[in-house]
Image (tube, rainbow over all chains, first blue to last red; front, side, top):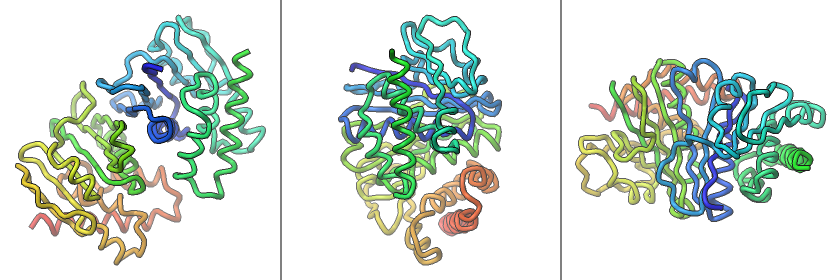
Length: 181
Length: 181
């Protein structure tokens, strides 16, 4: 793998920080990789778009801040408008169809994926939207295995909610597979 | 304030990452400060001691990694043994009496505080141990105001659990005040 730099962006309640921590823990605890996960907050954080960074590598990570992500996820229009420019040339930009109109020109693949709508259709509430997003990401990138994500969720989430999260992860994986073709 | 570098360390389920995110959000959203919050995981993370870093500053933060913290909290013996040496000269090292025997020589103040025991006495279960720890930290350092922590908790925690968390925060603040004298 070498090194993969990932940024999840969105608004406050969408769970992007939690998703980033879950991805980092899955990589470290169950795939024998190294990871750094961080949030930088400043004046702009008070404005709206939240961002959470993850670096995953099979060797030591020296500089923990993501400058140009290989993978950028934008869950709101604000996040897209603010961050689309940082995508690494040749990278992958994933946007949610419900909240984001893409259309900026970037030197990367852009995929609009109906994560929010599918979760609302299938689960009826948006609480596992961030886990669905993780499913899309791991399906398109193969960064970590779905089982590794599930093992982290088993450690963090009450048993009552595990099924719903597994469903959301599976929905995301299928949406990712569909977007590959 | 200039800049304060903080490290929370402990074992997996103690909530040190959550506490770090709450502290960073309190500083940014309600005290008009800047903050960076990060976790680095590597081979050693699989061993046991978890560490979560926060930098809080009234100006921009350029390098997000904490090398020598001004404030180091150790909630387990493993965490203490692994991290005590990184404390900044003149800094403040806070350890939990139940889990940690201090005794290493450091060029910093060491305070052993009965956080776990007091929480078990007063609340009967350890779930808000991390919030009690935050109370101790803000009481000893005045990094952010208790109201700012509570405002973050109000955004994150179901109403049913707010009272317990407020109690845990207050217990921590009193334990910190007692340790000052």
